Length: 284
Image (tube, rainbow, N blue to C red; front, side, top):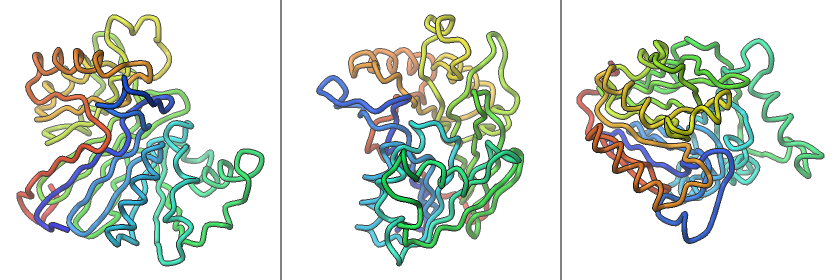
């Protein structure tokens, strides 16, 4: 691992449900899972269908101690957890974090309710890894590993959702999925999370032309992502949570439109890796 690089890898970028086929081969069909490497520390965000391949890569590289953060627990963001091989390995230590159901349901309850009959053939006790469940409240500042600071905030999504701002080595990467914007307004909670960020990973399920049909579903647009990044002084915008019906050709067209408006915009792809040389060993 390179201690002088903040690495971001997209293992899943699709929203709602995974897809396959030749028309989805360029951008990929796995649902949300994002890996960040802050030097020797490994952080995962969401457990969509991109989580199992992430798990295989972690095992291959010898990573046995890491953190997994949930934005929320809708199926597309947790469906990969039962097939995540590291949680069945006695040598692995995982800290699992959630805050979107604070006061209503703990992180352990979320996982236990999902991985049990009749939804899953066996109970959670088949997992031999050391699972350390961590609960937090939106707005908390988390310090999961030495030098890593994560700021949290609430997003606008049915059932609740958490946005994350990860700070390490003078770099900032924000995860903002899933959220719905109010027409004509910029969400201050999101602006706070993405201020001066090197990379904003943003929910761009729809276009503005489509929003009226899907108002209330809890998702946003690439146009709103651009407006937020411009207002917050962010440098790059990764479009994620792609509509499952959106083909490679359609996503390519959206990517071009977004890049014409904001030079740092791009449609994220499964397997894509970004590297940011650190500016210092101190978080901002």
